Length: 490
Ligand code: ASP
Image 1: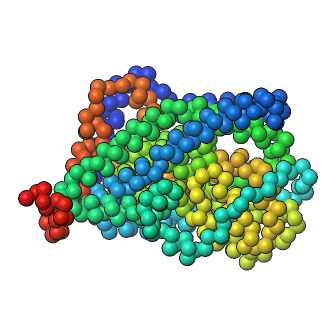
Image 2: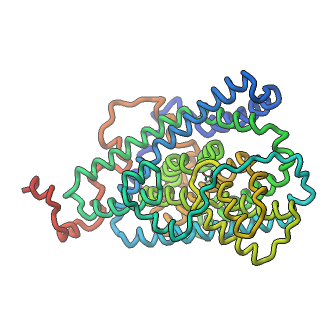
């Protein structure tokens, strides 16, 4: 625990040095609002397919927005891999990792089931699909779906046959699996593999630096993403579906303000509003990018630096959550089922609704944390109870608007469960949580470059040799020396 405290107090001590600190939260908010306004103006003034549309919206906005998302995604695989290796290596008690793992997965599943139930309840009460003008709804033909993955296939797929391929294709569960084993072994071998340990710790720190570099361009990237979204949709695309969009957003708000806040109070006794305040930049980021995966780096950093969660927990639970926990997506799917059933005059029986809860929870596990996949998985949910596939086409027309909100909730769910698990495992530094520093993680650190960095400054947890030495040093004595090492050490 002491290293957590030291690591988390370090950024505090450095603070006075940063004079011209960029407030990332404010910058993201401004870009978001500007993006919405500019997007709506463009949708009214620039005809689709015109030269200006091709140059500005489908040119500049599209390219800059995609560059920004790709920059974030570029960091995800190496960052997730390295931080899980480091986290697992410094877990002195592997049983704790097991307990945290099982607890996290259970909590992820339960919160998702709760999310679908809320959505179904709200949609039944508010009836967004009754009296819908079907002709006014924009319908988009769903592209090829990737919903045929069965549960056994998904379970088998957790173990990679080729780890390089897993990294190349960004298969998060496979990467997590390999990294956990590698980290665990490095932790057991400790000093004997100090060079490898040091490499991972330092590489991790390099990734952190890269995140703060990319965050500097976040406001521009976010503006372009949002402006293009609204320019393409336009108000006329949104209006006929406004009631449905409203129900989904209401469900998302209930999930955050009621379910998550209650869970935080009950399990951690922390002030939930303080949590939300600190977490807001991450939600805005997810809202703008519609990608849980691209938000992983910022989510992990914020939980560690602002909330006080030990990196050994975030490094594992956040990438896992971005892959299997999609509460916001489940809310959209639950509401969509009721909406489409109402629009087509189909009666939903309790058995059908129970099937929807089960399928939405498994769809959540199978949904990748990238834009739009939740709606593709919706086809599987509709299929499970025989709803017409045209329904998916109707939702696709306004998908991006829903995707922004649901992704913000998806990653908030991951963060809340992570904070609870950290608290239960005694790996939450409450003093970090309690400080009044609401600024986003240090995008502004680049503003005031410091002297050449030492290895210590680079590492997230102080001295790199700490990794793998967290437990009882005697345990290493019982492990046979690896061949490579024995030559050198003799
Ligand atoms: N965009 C969502 C995410 O990244 C997934 C989805 O629902 O489409 O979490």
